[in-house]
Amino acid sequence: MPEPSFTITTGVPLAPKTTLKLGGPAAHFVEASQESQVEQALAWANGQGLPVLVLGGGSNLVLADAGFAGLVLSMATRGLQTQSTPQGVEVQVAAGESWDALVAYATGQGWAGLECLGGIPGCVGATPIQNVGAYGQDVSQTIARVQVLDRKTLQRRWLQPQELAFGYRDSWLRRNPDAFVVLNVMFLLRPGAPGNLRYAELAHALAANPHPTVEDVRQTVIQLRRKKSMVLDPADPNTTSAGSFFTNPVVDQATARFVVDVALQRGLAGNSLEVPQWPAGEGQVKLAAAWLIEKAGFARGQRQGAIGISTAHALALVHHGGGTAQELVAFARTIAEAVWRAFHVKLTPEPIFVGLSF
Image 1 (cartoon, helix red, strand yellow):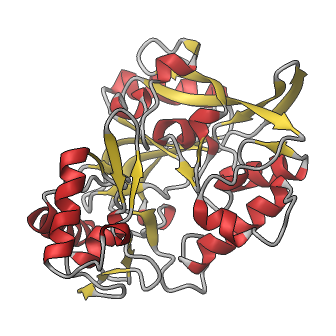
Image 2: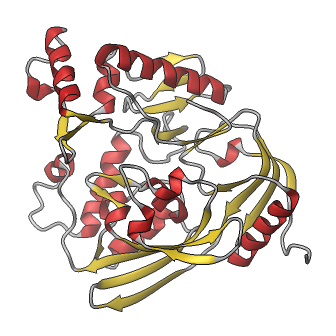
Image 3: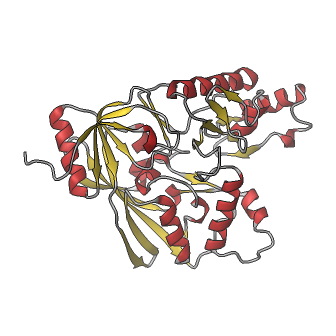
């Protein structure tokens, strides 16, 4: 095999490459700016019998304090191509591109489909894995297909939406992390279409604007996220987090009624309308994880050593410095266990755990 056209370094600290600033070093590390380098890096790791961790923006990752004893492949590929079709504009974007920059570009062109997803950190390649979403919109609504590289055979292929099997903050790719590396994502966006205002908080914020553009929607979303410390800002003490640490639980109707009954019996709500709930299809109900956490006895700003709850939003766990990933997970478990005891609702972490279990 020819020598790789990039440098493999050892013992690279990974904590600075994550938004939580936690985790140990990479045994081997490579930054791939070209797709050929991604392929070569995988071939090298396969030849060495090493596991591979693909790293994007590090904004949705909880990495063990021991680090990663394989190859960390940092995606730095770039590229954006557009093509008009009868259905809209196809936008093919390299996995290493900034997600927030893509949203800004799309809304700047007047293309609808991503406007509610501004201000979310990370890279484009991670979005189909997580089915990234916010404010009533998620990427499964606009992803036309995803180009992947098979980690074992090193063959490329395009996955269609039905193969990606998207779920709430989930996909086939997330459930099968060792199968593929995302190379490119193809979005189908709608020129001139109105922005998505299905989320009540967003619609209320734009109520004075009768005809908001998709750029108006993006800017408003960023303002709302900033108020909740959900954008990266070095001046914000809550910024050292992974964003929402838990997903909003989707439960059956009986469990949802039980939550309401508990809230009323314990004086946690004055009436059933004060318990946040939304229809989630097929007899399912979505609950608000932040509400459950606070009603289970946790306050914004509460700390356990170096780990705490954001002062702006109960869903975000913040690393205040000097802590460990194990301490973060321990505090998260404490919260989840309290919610279970109070409401019999299981909280599921949103970030991806590497070398740790929840």
